[in-house]
Image (cartoon, rainbow, N blue to C red; front, side, top):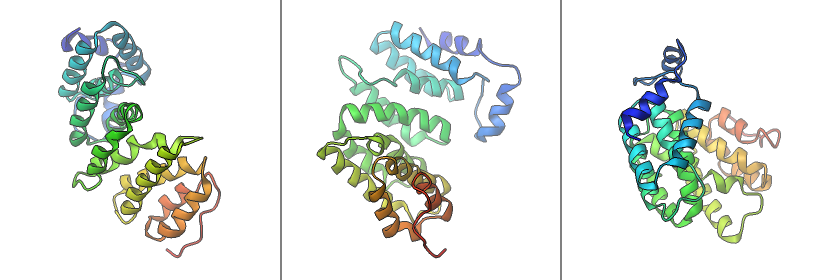
Length: 233
């Protein structure tokens, strides 16, 4: 499977008129084919099963380099699985290489989901992710929170997982004064997910840092728990 064949397979699922709608919605200047996510899912799943790991990594890299919206989504989905054998180092290296190129939430989120799997497989990789928190590139800073979401969602975290959770909350505390909407939304997303398992810790975070958050983010963070702690705006 080469990249030309893969693009042909993707294009065969294009819906007339959908590409223009997608371009208007995502507001990022790149080619859109007009392919729905379920069709990309099906193709990526088939290729994950049929290709060798080496060929899959090469196809993912080549699809990403086309800078076509659906191709980048498919590249991420090719690497989205819990276990990659015999080693997932190549997949993790590829995901890392994509992060500085993130420029839109949909592509960034799909690639970050692939990154989540690699972090859960080897939590020591969070040392690398921590370096993104000081980046001048907003999407890299955001990716640090999106890729670590599994630790916000863990229902029964082990002591080592709790340490990681507190580490990421420290990053979030450093983000709360960031005016960028996407950063505020990412902080709220992390806190909202954690509030489903540990509402007391989220309340404590909001008491300590909520005054620095945008009102919408503070409200979103507390949405599952009910009204957020009162703060003057």
